[in-house]
Length: 219
Image (cartoon, rainbow, N blue to C red; front, side):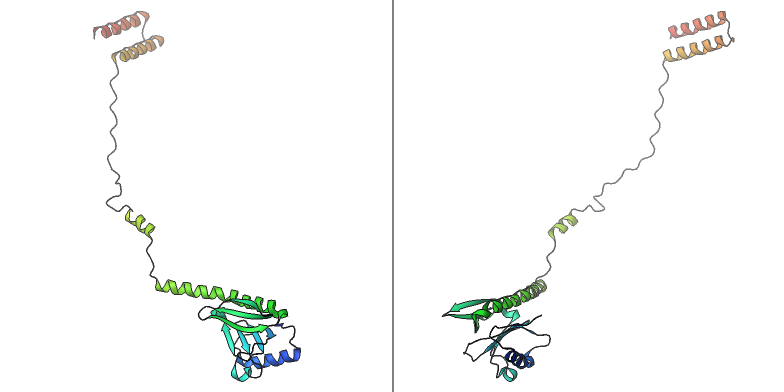
């Protein structure tokens, strides 16, 4: 990522400050913005925003004594630029210890410093939220799912399952006997067939037909 440098910070001075800050940086930490400031309590003449924290330092001492003020990304809730008596003060609102005035920066650098610091806040916030969520999940016991319990409690067991009644094959229904009228018709049909085939003569067919009719009438 390209280093952002204050408008009034000369190249030679910039390189000297970076060399002085290098021994104080953590592994993987890099400076994102570097600007001069005029905050004298404590004595500081530079401000650095890294990918892990904000540092206010005095360039002649920082290499051996470290920064005068610092706020880590994990403790940084938000930042603001407050204009007081013509000076732009960078104020860090910390999560645990309240606000801290870090530096008085030049107006030309105020927007750049604020935006870089806000980016640091945004990149650190998700990590903090995830850590809090994991800690809460570890502390709280897992709650049973009442819907699953309801389903289990109402699930049919072996005693409540409907049983299929097994029975033998249904016996065929007995065919009702043919009526007398049907019997007469069948008999007359047979006699007519025999008559057509020449088995019965006209006289025999007439006599047999009359006999069948008489039997039907007598029943």
